Amino acid sequence: MTRTLFRPVGPAELKLVADSNWTAFPPRLPEQPIFYPVENETYARQIARDWNVKSSGTGYVLRFDVDEAFLRAYPVHQVGASIHRELWVPAEDLDAFNAHIVGPIELIATYPETE
Image 1 (cartoon, rainbow, N blue to C red):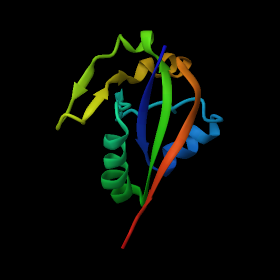
Image 2: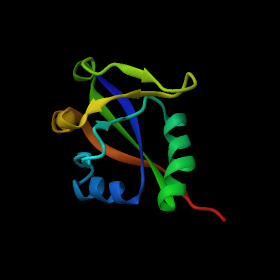
Image 3: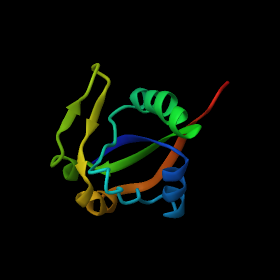
Image 4: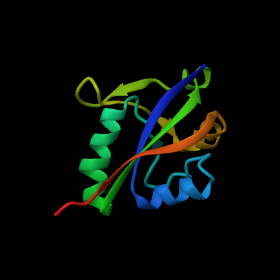
């Protein structure tokens, strides 16, 4: 079985995912010790619209499926309201995480900066 997760990203991360042929997320930067996919599309859209647009001009939402058994190692963290739920995957586990993605990573929403 798989579980559907979401990831809000800016243009730089989107390009790296596209460069992987939509199969993997890029390694974390030194100041990014955690990779945090989110559990629901509404929360991912909030982040893309409210944070990514402000920091980089455009926000994107990605959807992907991951082997559910693999995800059991990563507890869900609620970081705000009931919809604000994330998995916290240590950066050193990202290669293993990517290996358990089932199918392509899909771009499902784009938020351009509005004036």
